[in-house]
Length: 359
Image (cartoon, rainbow, N blue to C red; front, side, top):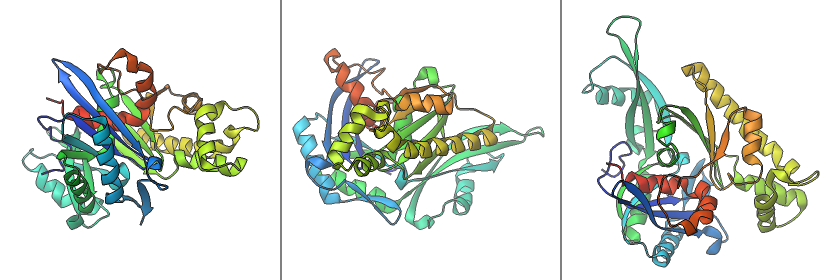
């Protein structure tokens, strides 16, 4: 079975993230106990096309197999990767997450109980999706011997899985496994020091933003919505009457540090929308679990925008830092600056590759 996000595969070296505006590939290996970056590659959609890899169709993100196969083949050939064993990350927009509660039962009874409960929680025909689940908590009940089992349920449309299988086959990759982006992101960014904390990973991508809450190393919430990095660029372009490429350059150079009348005022309404959405998710999690998020980690292509981390810290009253998935990975020192800049946008690919190194 290809879709097995909660089962550990024996080996794997390539982590592949097919994003909206770029395809990222990271090659990892293990030298003793040390995790090592062997190679990486990226292909931006704009390098080959005038359109993104992914487009919105019927409220979902879809992409052209032909365009992706052409681009993926190009970056695989150009970068010269040594392995063809691949782990793909599936966008959270293409997956459905929910948490269900089960009464006390044996581990052998849980699969049947999950199958029984799933139709009540998944807003898709079960015959059209592949289900997987993970126990995230066992809570003791008031009465002796009673407990509640909380289960994270994940559903992925079968046609999405088939699409990735077709792409891998077309470019000659051995597709070992696929998993939702949030699991790759968590693996890349949650270190041993954070395993007992409640942390939010905010992934601001080109076409969507995803708010994830990771509690004690376990994914508890993953919520996506449309406001994104490309929206920032679009409002700058319209507000200043400049083309998209120039607006993108301004965003990356000035961000929220622009002076009065600059692009900061243009972007703030959209950024504040993201802030308000985060506050709602945090509040809902606190009401349900009685736990507060202790730290925010910003990932995605817009994470490096000047002033953004400070703005999040100020408005959410929590420490906020920029994602660096290469913190505990060995790489040549000459790549230090390059990887620091790549980190936020490559975190998902890094996490997918790291899955192959799990024991």
